[in-house]
Length: 188
Image (cartoon, rainbow, N blue to C red):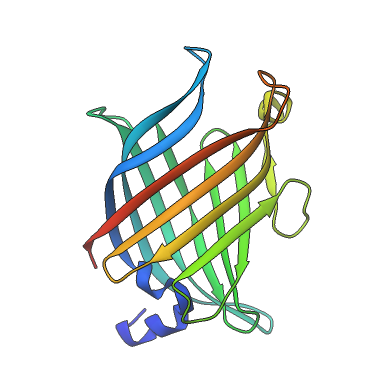
């Protein structure tokens, strides 16, 4: 996509490039210790533009993205994602579709404007439009009930706060697995 086409990405145009963050915080249940705790992580994301993708009268522009997160000096990431961030200008919708290697797929969305620098994506289990699917084991032991991610995009910095709500075998109540980070652009 030529540089002048980035405007067709709407609120996603500021994400194009490679980003890194050192101070991520993951709050999750640690099975080995049988307790909930925070894990500090470093993260690298790449966003590559594409488009248009035409679905009849719908015209989408988007970002192919890849993410990896590491604890401390570990060589192998403890978490990865692959997917797409999409912009539909006609409906004012940002979508994020991604899969994690645990066997969960999420399609979340937010209604916003083309010049927005902050939006909140949401998905709910059982929603046939913006929903969550998972493998059988997870559906029985650690089922994702909802997903919410607030994104704030600056000039050379962006941040996110995620809340993945789980129904886990270890708890009577729902469990909030949260992640947050501030990333800086390292390559446009």
